[in-house]
Amino acid sequence: MIEIDCVSKSFGGQKVLEEVSLGIAKGEKLLLMGQNGAGKTTLMRMILGEYRPDKGGVKIDGCDPLRERQKALAQIAFVPQMPPPLKLTLEELTYYVSQSCGIESERVWKFAEAMELEWKQNLKKTFFKLSGGMKQKLLIAIALSRDAQVLMFDEPTANLDPSARIRFDALLREFAMDKSLIFISHRIQEVEGLVERIVEMDLGKVVRDEKI
Image 1 (cartoon, rainbow, N blue to C red):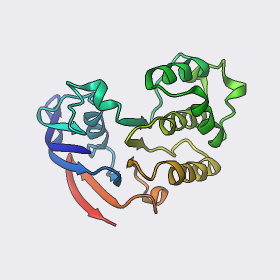
Image 2: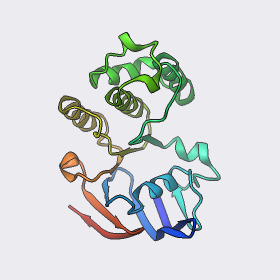
Image 3: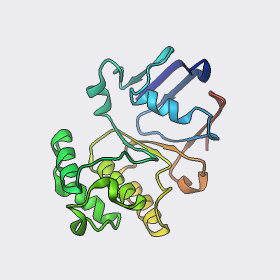
Image 4: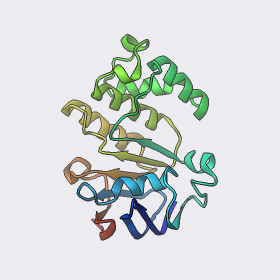
């Protein structure tokens, strides 16, 4: 599904990724671990086509996320650790998602409600004015509502309370176990029982890759 072939990347002379090769199969559940600065986020942005590698390449279901961006990213739903400062209201954002992804707004609200997001009371609120937890819940709802083959989460539970974390886990088990799941996290306990493979990075290299 995702092929990362000998990718290297430097910023200002500092090497962030060094000849990283990684294959993620369709339906595989993977945890990407590592300390801050290990290269996890840079690798993630390579997959999303946000960075151009200095060497090597990335393919998503055979598509280059740089040259065939729309086709490649149609396969991926992504929830970032730091939500973007969007100035759209919840109503506007959901409408945009429904039009661009070809899904019904009601499907987004269904998952938002399952995440205990009080969306009806907040439809006219601007996204960036929401609390961190509310932003995270809505982004998770949007990701789950799409028919993407890959779901990628960067520290997905960082802003969630214990109840929302339980609901997030339950929704993944109910609606996403036929997808490829990629978690970027420091905490293995938060995805325990969901992942089947751990990839650990350090100083821009893969130092551990094993099934669990």
